[in-house]
Amino acid sequence: MPGQKQITTTQATAVVISTAIGVGVLSLPFFASSLAGSSAPLATVLGVVFVLIALALNTVVSLRFSTLSMVQYSEEVFGPWIGRMAGLGIAALFLGLTALAAREFGEIVTTTLLHRTPLEVILTLTLLMAAVSNRHDIATFAYIHSFYLPFILIPAFIMLTIALRYGDPFQVMPLYNGEWWGIAKGALLTASLFQGAFIITVLIPSMHRPRSAWFAVTLGMGIVGLLMVMAVVAALTVLGTEEAKQFFWPTLEVIRSITLPGEILERIDVLMTIVWVVAVYTTLFSSYYLTVYVLGEIVRLKDHRPFALAVLPLIVGLALLPQDVHQLYRWIGRVGYFIDAASVGYPTIVLILAWLRGKRGRAVDEGSTVAPPGGS
Image (cartoon, rainbow, N blue to C red):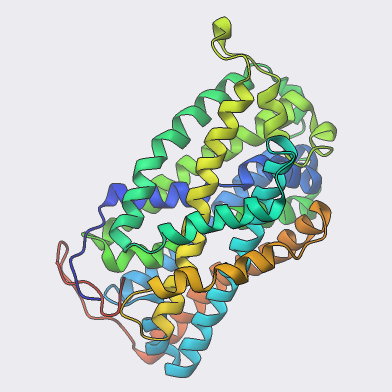
């Protein structure tokens, strides 16, 4: 709906970072080492590069149609019906992603913290919190991410820096082990865990200075990439490549093995768990928001709030479908490749067709207060 462009560059950067850092930070070393072996750090770097390319493509498209939402410019390029169906496909993909991320969160919580609490209770309460948070506009969405970001980044960097002191660098040798196919698969699966390529399409129409999205994307993924590489290197140097494959959540095992100087905190893994819970909340918040935002655009609602609670039972139901954690991670791997394909393929197709058909959005001056029609 019409309104002011309120999102700043700093807020956009915070959204990119806190969307990408989520539940996968604990399992990333497991996936990367299982597929790429000692080249897991290399696979992680390549995964970050892949996400940066996907973000860049989505940024180019959104800047070309800077006053339109993703559904609106899809209808402009593909036509009304195909555009809406494409938007519905993106919404369905992120609805499934939200469900799987919530289930992974539930599995970790029931295994490490709340052993007697039913999984259904944890999933319902977690997703209900995300649903209630999503009943706000885009400005509040950006503010929430900005507020929580320091509580995620600062402790995470401190703990991983300390963990690296306990590691043996020879555990990650050779950095390139010659298994190029495993490295490629590891990079793609790593990229899918970041989940954030489409979030920029929600932000740009409401940014005070849309072209500063380039700064937000570059700085945001730079910080995310550094943190994720540190997590993988810490897991491999402390546990070893083969040992890291034995744990679903190697990062948590690494943090459990370290102590703060002066024994300030006896159980540092408790602090890591708190940080991780906040990171998971912001990631679920983003994927949930993207789902209901796109659905609201498809049916031409003035805002997306009616969908925030409407899709909750469906997401909870999907989250309960995997029989165990092994099946859960098989599904995450398969859905991850669809996320990768959509993140790069969709904006590429839109760009090519927009160029061939001469489609372009209405130019808006930097700092304009005109919000996108139909936006949140």
